[in-house]
Image (cartoon, rainbow, N blue to C red):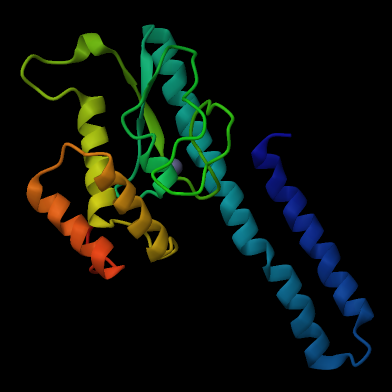
Length: 208
Ligand SMILES: [Zn+2]
């Protein structure tokens, strides 16, 4: 079933659940109505998740279609505040029609082991791909995939994350990154080392 069709199912499920709650409420009156409303409004975050998934998938499909038309690969682009799983994919290039590798993460917990066809990597993923060919690299300019990779490592080192991602996950990711000997400026590595020592990152600056 197409993900977009799922939204209609969610609304129908929540509608039925709300009616069941209302019918079972022995006391009736306002408490029963509120209980029914609570069931119904659970549809809002669920539908929002589906909508986000559909938009990200549509963008990825569009990029893949362009890449195929050009006969080139796709490079993975993650948001600066992407999670420890998605940042591990930033800058990776999949061949034309190929998939991204399975199970990558900057985190400690292993990600699932299936190859990744395209974003979204998980619910609420905001990643995308853009067509890429190594032939497009300009002399003396860091190739786009490597620039993306460096920015992703910088995000891990600086703790650029959404509030929804636990601090402990980001601190552990920074610790693993430091152990891997990243090609980052000494000041950024020192910043990450302080965060690992303290077990917390300073707040993410506005606009990140
Ligand atoms: Zn993502």
